[in-house]
Image (cartoon, rainbow, N blue to C red; front, side):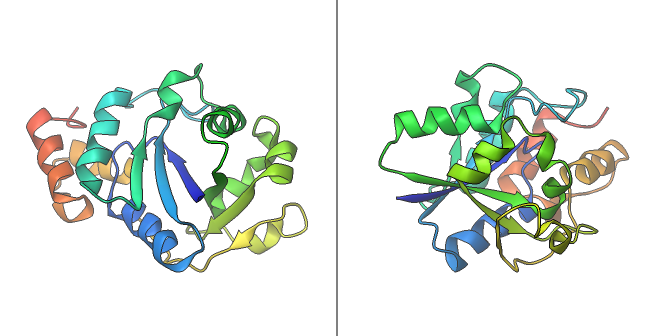
Length: 191
């Protein structure tokens, strides 16, 4: 099975994440999309990061019983911080019949050369790149081999949602209904 790994902190998961995952599920050759919740990215500070199981629960709430787009807590079992190359090695060992690909926003190409063993990633895994505001992937065509997907340009970010909730703004249409309700019930991101 060809599986697209969409890695992120999902702090919180929002409609932009789901739209991108749905786009790849419907318009690419990927048979499943796994939203891999990262306990901590080596490039992000832990400040304002909800515990991993709460973020995983929100992804579960967002996806419901969707069998094509699934949550994955695989990185919870690995050393922290999470390195994509280690996650992929672990997944290849656990699921040898699957072919794994990475789904990345074009903003990730700016620092991709700083990823652990990025050359190994490029030689063993396909990159499926989608547009992010202000990051033209064409500038990286000479550096990296990737598949460009003209997915919708989504100008929503988890940091904008967290900031807005902290300011008392109503963000219910930016989040899946059950995720919004859970955030309100738990008072996440209010302080």
